[in-house]
Image 1 (cartoon, rainbow, N blue to C red):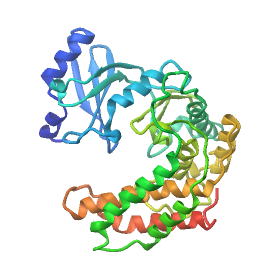
Image 2: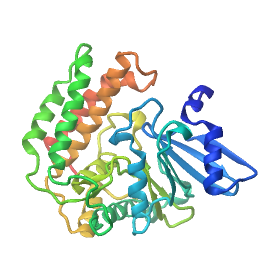
Image 3: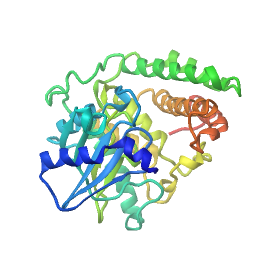
Length: 353
């Protein structure tokens, strides 16, 4: 990370003054940018003997739902008093004179986020099985919450959530296609979009939804057996359809029987090893924990892959317009058609639970 970019993220002197005012002065401090993630920025702060995390939008972005860190602070602050494990939020700041944007501060948790591989301490069948169970059980905790009782009754519009998701991602793809179809077309995505619009469930449960719930957005505590101690990245949370959360989580979960991944560079495959739960087992556990049935499962799993394809196609447009030097973006020329083909396999029953 360049010094210039870091300076766009924070005014260090102003931030230090703010933290001193609210947390007290310390003899030593350190601020480091977290390199993972592609949306809101995450900064790790050592403040004396405290380890903190700061979340802020990317510099230059106009704050909207996708980058609304104060919304993220609100939901985590509310959930801190529930059974859903979240980092302890400490401060929220709307004063843009401090670092140029809204931001919030929370305690840093200790443990591991499982991205590229499993920790060696989990490499036993009974621990591997528990990873999937912990992942599903904590999703069920989110979906079981009485959102009205905890004060989140105006946090979103749950009715019509699923239809809006289909419409939103269709519009995102249309925007991307304005440029990308001059390079190559993806007719399968048009077919998938048509199928989704025709197949939207008429009704769905109304719950709090995370919006981006997957294995690398949670943390497991040090030691064994695996214990999930934190759910992160609540920026897309709202009131909506819990089956959409489950479908999204399943789109990232691999079974040993699966074909080769459509985006190998971004696909975690260690859960194909012996001991890990299958997607079907995860679904059955979620149904048992929530009392909901995963009806229309092909719809929800197809919607998840459609959304992934939409993200990829937007990346490809930005690459074609010269608005990104991310080496992953040009690969979307082939990766998005592969995602579209995967979505059609799910629709046709060729990639089952």
